Length: 79
Image: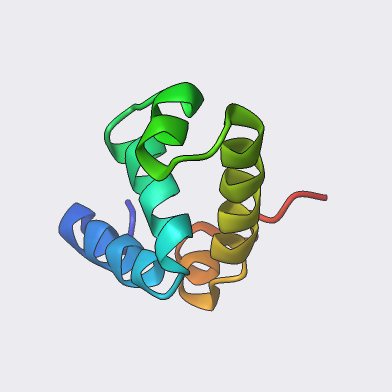
């Protein structure tokens, strides 16, 4: 049994995403909510695939710092 309801989880994720830089938000939204490829995201934000990968990595690193998400899912930082 998970102490958080799905709607609560979605709300918390949206709130935590909203704290990120706009470019980070855009890349994560396109990648994980709209299932876009790195190339497609690059076209939208006018950068190459490698730059999208760097932005995605930085955005996920920032998201992993979220204390709220850590409480919900445990420590999900890479070791």
